[in-house]
Length: 67
Image 1 (spheres, rainbow, N blue to C red):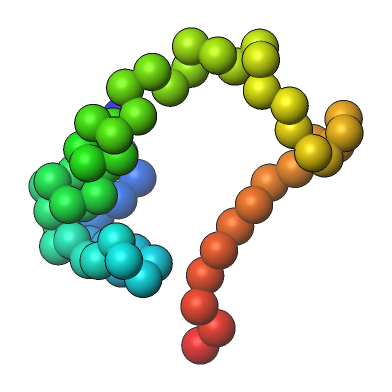
Image 2 (cartoon, rainbow, N blue to C red; image 1 turned 90 degrees about the horizontal axis):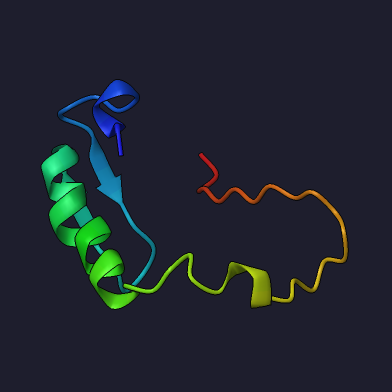
């Protein structure tokens, strides 16, 4: 993943409750990305067997906190 193309090297990651925070890209990788990748090593293997409850819509989901 080419995160350094899009994220500032000193960015702060504020994850949702239970996930925590990470400082910088390396903090994000260590505390968020790597645990997810380790927990789901078979991602992408069963894509053709997944049923999506949104019929044929093309959707985009975004989360954030109001200011």
